[in-house]
Image (tube, rainbow, N blue to C red):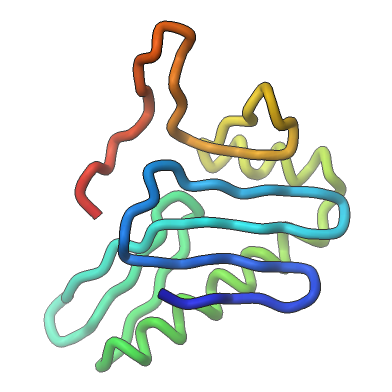
Length: 125
């Protein structure tokens, strides 16, 4: 698990799967809770966060994790520079859904009014 944070951005990255990934967006901050998929590609360690199209690779796990953290930081910085409505638009383009209860929370997985879980496609992380 690692933390990528500064005064405006904070993300929790873990290979222990969250049931629901979240990105909380406001005018001045972005907080993310994201799952990491990891493995080997030839001789390289690879870390992916498919929900935001972020990745890192390296000869060691540490190098791959550092590259991933940099990619996440760049994603969050780029997102932060946008207006609130453009932030929402970009997240929707990546497949995120805005929750109805908390207007600034985005999640791909959700439970409908009948209690059925939807959009939880990657059950093995």
